[in-house]
Length: 68
Image 1 (cartoon, one colour):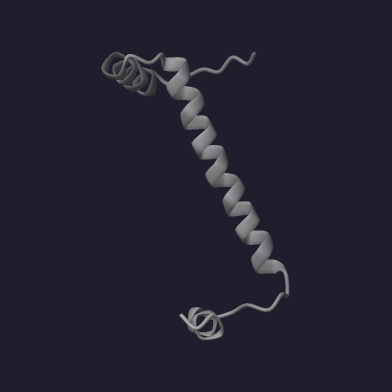
Image 2 (cartoon, rainbow, N blue to C red):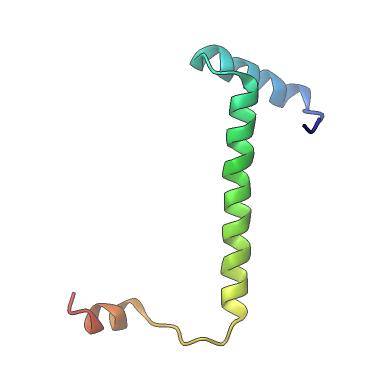
């Protein structure tokens, strides 16, 4: 278990969201953290792939190769 300090304005927003949805603040906070972490990880994967000298294909090349 971890403890974090949440700014009052963000806490109020989570409180209101919990009230409106019937879900707990903790559920919303965990969901928000998961979503943000997914986005961060995707960004790092994208940056790593840009640094790799692999062959890249233009969308038109892919369509032509796949007869789309």
